[in-house]
Amino acid sequence: MPETVLVTGAGGFLGRHLVQELLHRGYGVRALVRPGTGAAFPAEWGVSYCEADLGRPTNFPEMQNFAVGCAAIIHAAALAQVNPARHPQIGVVNLAGTENVLRMVRKAGVARFVYVGTANVFGFGSQQHPGDETRPYAGKHYGLDYMDSKRAATDLVLRAVAQEQLPAVLVHPTFMLGPGDAKPTSNALLLELYRGQLPGYPPGGKNYVHVRDVAVATVNALVQGRVGESYILGNQNLSYREAFALMARVMGVQAPRWPLPAGLTQLYGEYCSLKAWLTGRPGQVNAAMTAVANDGHYFNVHKARTELALPQTALETAVSEAFHWFKVHQYV
Image 1 (tube, rainbow, N blue to C red):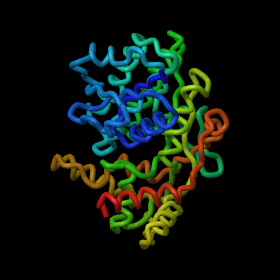
Image 2 (tube, one colour):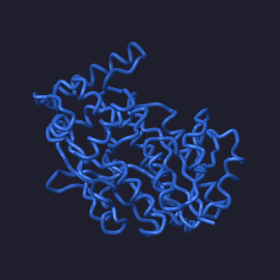
Image 3 (cartoon, helix red, strand yellow):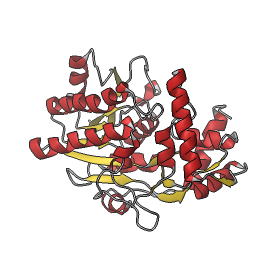
């Protein structure tokens, strides 16, 4: 019998790629999905399901028993919401949800636990001197519950490693692009660019990675990597000007032409935040999002390439595959 891996957040953008990668390698898969999600994969794939609200599970005994017999758990479930910047549900899903998954891990006695975080829990750097896993968290000043909750959840896992010898490896993706983003989440940036909804480019930038590369390295972490270590999963560091030009070229549209000064960008973010507060409806962006866009969130991924065999698929391929998927599924 093949070893079985439980994947939380299996119905999400990354989760679906994780399931496919696991099945491709011959693992059995159990999928923990949000209530009402149902079967997310073809029946012939043989994926078993359990629906549960990780943050406030009403069926915790069922959820806990679902993990018994699994060789490993990959915890990819998260609420990656940044607009609004503050919302209590974010902490419930990302922090309380991780606490509940750790309870599952303890009962199941798995040989490996892979926690999926975010590169934003580390300090970022410039393109010349990008941040890495050794840099302390630098995102507190943004006021984003997403970043803060993911840092707190990361610390929770690290404490369990130190105090309980939890066999955990932590992987932290950067900005993921690629096919299959049904919601859509990060790939919504491509749709906005394609539809001409981006008036210009802010002064910052970030690291981009193909979602399939993240899935490969995360599954590699089941047998590779060092317990208690964190690995940033990324690829190309690009300014927004560089990234938007590349994306527009691949999709055959005009790239935003005008640079947006940091002060103007932030002023617009503050205006949107004030309007959202007055109306109760989130705007296109908020002050926290524009503050992030003004900074360079660049990272070094040498550690993951060396120890987790992280692939490095060109960003052009990720954009092309994502755009093709959107066309096939009539998003554009």
